[in-house]
Image 1 (cartoon, rainbow, N blue to C red):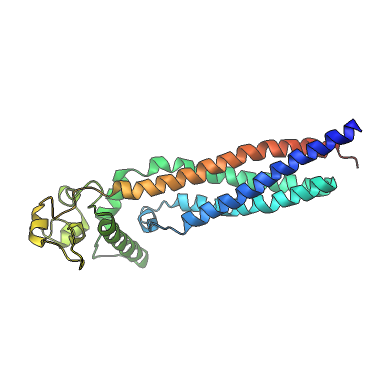
Image 2 (tube, rainbow, N blue to C red; image 1 turned 60 degrees about the horizontal axis):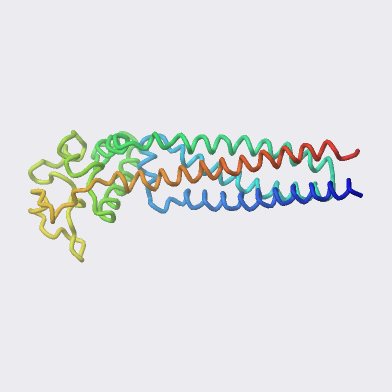
Length: 259
């Protein structure tokens, strides 16, 4: 009698563990969907760097999150029925998904060091208003980077990566088609009126503080990307830690089931 009570208690613990895995999997899926939807419209900037691994990690996280939910249900059924075959399928599939989630979490975690100012500065100088695309892929990047930077500077009231001086200090495609005297920086760096026009274009060109945005846009770019990267990484790691102990307990339970 005591042995039966102990087995039932262990089953309840494993079922609750799988319930947490399933709910966490759904939460991870939702988080990754939100990130992939690119609410801040920053994907073109990463695409131009030829390194959008953080979005790849989110796609893997979306897949593994849903798999955790489905497999958790399978595990609950196997535990309730004490079915060795179901539990064996559960353990094998869960191990595969576990490996994928490890890859997703590590990829997301390592992207933080990638989001440095010089990364975004380089592609801004190279692609913004570039008039000489050499193929369709290059044209796609130029269009994406130009439109993204225009929107970021207007909406966030900032200019360049570090500030307006970026457009004067470094050589750029923008400078090749705009003289320093005519346009020292894009008009999107100018303070706008309610009609979307510069308050005073001449004052903006001279760099008068009340008519040009002096702050750089780096925080508005790297901030959301870093937050999402850490969210995908550390929430994934938390699920992995919990899942490890549930799988360990399930393997022990599997060895105790009679043929």
